[in-house]
Image (cartoon, rainbow, N blue to C red; front, side):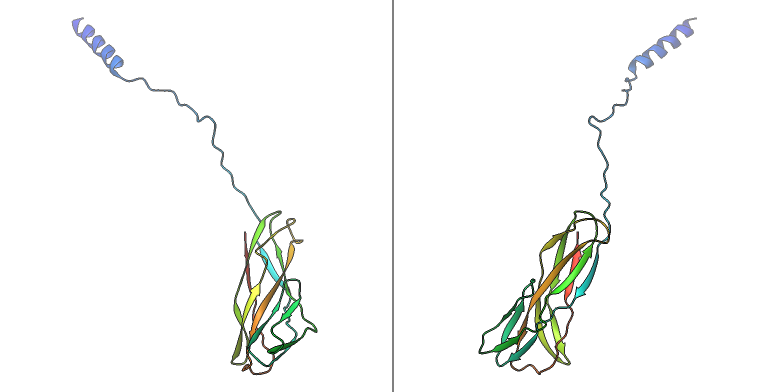
Length: 165
């Protein structure tokens, strides 16, 4: 019997010495997990940029703004025939009401081995009006540096434009 009392006392001591385990408690307030799904962007050139015809007698530049208005350099250096002049146009589609950042980087216009520096002028961004095929159009102008030493002929190059959310 003494042995039983000792074992019972030992069991009681072990139970008293064991720390109490706390009940699980949820976070207050509860954290939420979120994700915003957007449609991928598409970008298409829908109109080429044309400066028109330029008669060059000295080094200068010719610009066309995003609205399509040509600004000719100094009359002593260049004469511009604006016939057919127009800014380029691009069409971007993506997700509803998303702000789209536009980046246009400099390039060259080439005529065989001869090149002229081209600097595009694009809007900083555009907001898409709705999802799907409707999208938004934006225009790109630019400046071409013309050189008196440039061989005559047609100079052509890419307008490097990218878009991102």
